[in-house]
Length: 394
Image 1 (cartoon, rainbow, N blue to C red):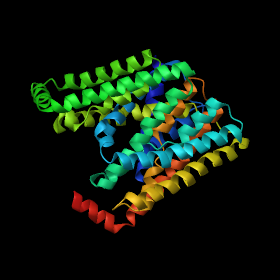
Image 2: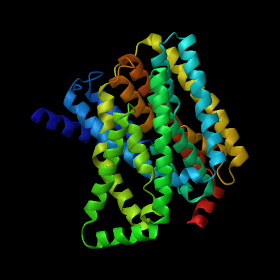
Image 3: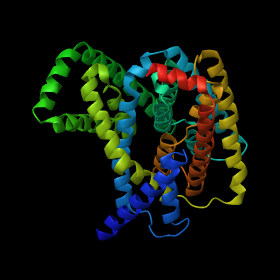
Image 4: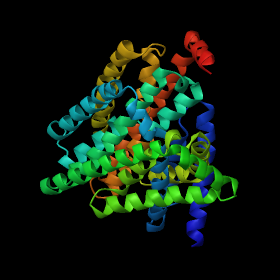
C-alpha cells in the first residue's frame, strides 16, 4: 500500500509541477501531466511501472473527468445553432477521421480495430482543452465562442458513440443503438421536465444549500452519474458515455445558476488538483518509445487531421464566424487532449490497441496540442479587434 501512496505522490508532484511550467508558456497542462508519466515510466526512468491499483484509480479519475466534461458541455450547447455545430463536427472531425481510418487500414495495413482506435484518438478535438482556451481568452462570452464550443462538444459525443459501437457485433450494435436512442429520448424528456420544474427545483436546492447540506447535492450528482454509468455498462456500452450523458442534464436551466456554479467549481477543483493530473500521468506511464518505422504513419495521421480538418475549420470560420478569425478557429479546432487520450487509454485496456500504437496516438496528440495551442495564442495576441469585442461583451 505504501508503494501505491508513494507512486501517487510522485506522479502528482511531477505532473502538477510540469503542468505549471507548461501553463506558463501557454501550453496545455495535461501535456505536462502526460510528460510526467512518460519520464517516470518505463519509457525513460522506470521509477514507476503500471499496476492494477493505478489502473483502478485511473478508471475512477476517468469517471469524474468525463462527468465534468458533460457538465461543462451541457445539453444547452446543443440546442443553440445546431446546424452550425453539426456542420463543424462533420467536416472538421468526421471527414478526416474517415480518411485516416481508411488510410490506416488499406495503406498502412493496420487491423480494423487499431485503425479506428488510433484514427479516432488523433482526429477528435477535446472539449477540455477548447473550454480552457475559450474561457481564459474570454471568447466564450461571444456567440462565436459558443458555436466553437458546441462543435467540439458534439464531436466528442459522436466520438464516444463511434468508439463504443465499432467493435460490437452487428446484432449487438443494433441493440446498443436502440438502447442508446431510448436513453437519449428519456434524457431529453427528463431534461425538459427539469427545465419546466426548474423554479421549484432551484428553490429546493437553495434551501438545501442554505441548511448546510450542500454536500448532499454534490453527492446526488455523483450517484446519478454512477447509476447511469452502471446502466450503460450493464447493457454493454462503456460507462464513459453514461457519465457524459448524466453530466449533460446538469446546467443552469435545470438547477439554477447558483447551484450550477457551485457544482462546476467543485468538480473543477477536485479534478484539476487530483484526478486530471493523476489520470494523464498514469496514461503517460503506458507510453513506450515508438520504432522509427512507425514515424511515417504518425506523420500521416497528423497531416490528415491538421490539413483536412484544419481546412474545413478555416472554411467554417470564414462562413459562420463574425468576430473570431479563421486562425483562432484553427487553433481551437486543433485542441487535442483529454478526449483523444481517454479513448486511446480505454482502447489499450480493452485490447484494441497495442502498446506501440497507443504510444503513437499519445505522441501525435501531444504534438498537435502544442502546435495548435501556439497557433491560437499567437492569433489571439495579434487580434486587437477581437480583444475589444471581448471587453465589450464582458
